[in-house]
Image (tube, rainbow, N blue to C red; front, side, top):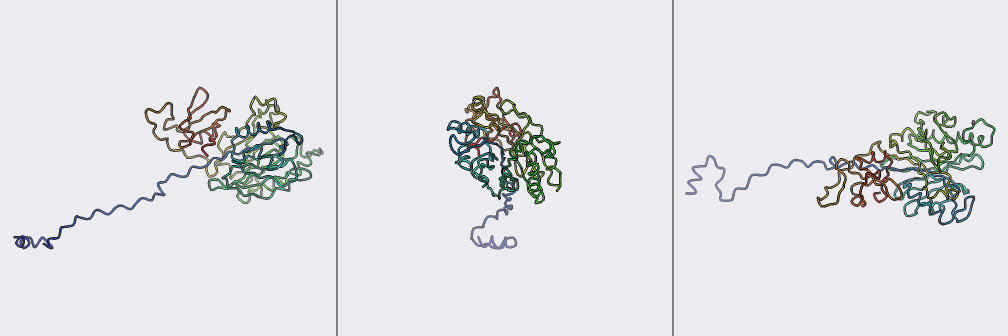
Length: 384
């Protein structure tokens, strides 16, 4: 009967062998999507950059014009912790040993000028940052004054050149043509600094000059006008401290002499409203003579972009979890700690789940890191 069936269906069947018929092949799978295209862009790292004149910071106790004991160095350490900066341009320091007494060597590397002086300029910068050290700017030493500390940081795939300066004192607003000895020296430092700026601009480098200028700079000041002459074109500068009123030690000197000059190429990285000054704690007022007559200033840059990408919303919190928590549209927690530091916590930070926001204390939620930074918050240390 089997043969009859094969004969009857011969025109329709190719074969009547008894092997089982294989199932039809599955449709070809669509090419896999390129996972790289779907991956979110890497989160850009914000960089908090500060400048702080530490007022004859000596490496030894009870030495120098500002003798300090262990308790005084500890107060300076607390101020450094409150500052929570990634990079600090320093002035008036007696070498790396002195910096270790203020900036934790477990967190920071150090670079100071090679000048044999107890008033050296330099940097403390966080471990993990890639830094290229450059020769000191010797040309600033026009006779018994400080050289400049020069380095390049690489962050978010971008290079940022930094110069820490401490210029000649006692020509705060007088004419550079004044016969006063201090003004003569400051006028001689001007072309050396301008040459460094022009060379960086001509090379297409993004840069920031910061430190103690010992000058009340503003847009009309002749010293600043000469630096910001737009020649070459990329030498166009932004004076971040312009118009800022100092409240350091009760506002005794409202016009700043500590400044930051940002290049045109670095300007897109500036976080609006982030320039600030960190005053000392009220309880430290009676120790003013053994701390510093300068309060640190700081700014936040995001190399590689003006705006930070908004982080993904946090994972859903189980219904039994304690409230309150951030709304999905406001995932970042802006907390104020016991030292009155404004710290923001990202989803995924070790501190995120335990951080509670009390809006009556001025704490708040943010939609993005850019919003938090613009409002004066800095990234919590445990999130780095």
